[in-house]
Amino acid sequence: MNISRVGVDLAKSVFQLHGVDAQGKAVWKRRLSRNKWIGTLCKALPRGCEVGMEACAGSHHWARVLIGHGYSVKLIAPQFVTPYIKSNKNDANDAEAICEAMSRPNMRYVKIKSIEQQDIQAIHRVRSELKSHCHAKANQIRGLVTEYGLVAPQQLSSLRAAVPCWLEDADNGLTDRFRALLKGLWDDLTYLDQRMDDLNRDIETIAKTDPMARRLQQLRGVGPLVSTALIAAVGNGDQFRRGRQMAASIGLTPKQFSSGGKERLLGISKRGDSYLRSILIHGARSTIHHAKHKDDPLSKWVTGLAERRHPNIAAVALANKTVRMAWAMMQSGEDYNPDRAVA
Image 1 (spheres, helix red, strand yellow):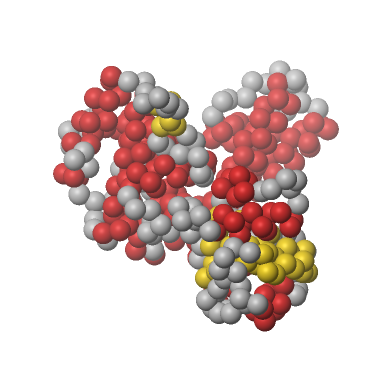
Image 2: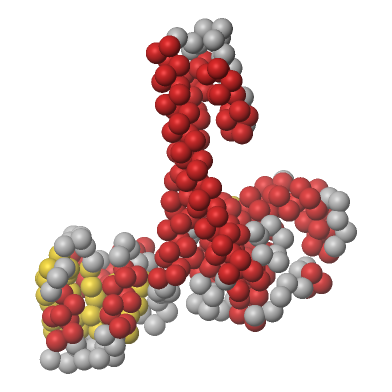
């Protein structure tokens, strides 16, 4: 049995494998449990054989395991596998579609993340969820105290200062039962703030110790949060041939709807990591806000753009340029050069 490549449909407990020979003919099909599939695959496949999987939950872990056994692993985005599914969707057809997608010479693959990248990504994911919980808890407090005639301030920092005053004020009309309930909500919010502070310190430590993160922070609008999120998402960026490809993968380039030789560009595509794109744009907005008082080439460029176009367009354009410069710095290992920022 001469197997040249294998497509694997990952799942929680049952894995479907589909192997083909050099001519693309199916010669090996297996449905295996989580504990047995690696051993069975290693017995059937020669070292150096290509193994393909969808880039989904657990795929980066299994990719590192297979690489450790001497196999060449390729991860494919699910949207690029879907066109090759024949007839109905099931595990066997999914594995066959993955195997077929691997045979395409122009197929785009997802770079396998290292354990360090996944550690950093996990910190950012947990921090983002905690932040949403903080806002949800604050909104719950605002809604509840409104029923007792208290107006909560809009800023979260102002709300943190107001809640202890409400709890201590005996003449504000709050009942003992609701005061105890509000104290519990305040404790919940305080706990979430402490967790956020701990994760922020972890991110700052990573940003200080990682050489690439320190270099990226030379860019305008890039701090510990953005630099570490970039590293977690793209690594060193060597999977991209140019900076525009990296910006396109994050969704910062225009979506195209062209036909008959007529070019038509729409809004940004919003592909890729929405969290990374969001913090990049927030950093760009901060840069535009402070660029009015500076006279360097980048500040002049983005200030002029913000005067001609909508501020959101200017922020996205600056975020796009920041990602391109970040890719150039990742590939060259050079520091930020302000003179080349608007070249």
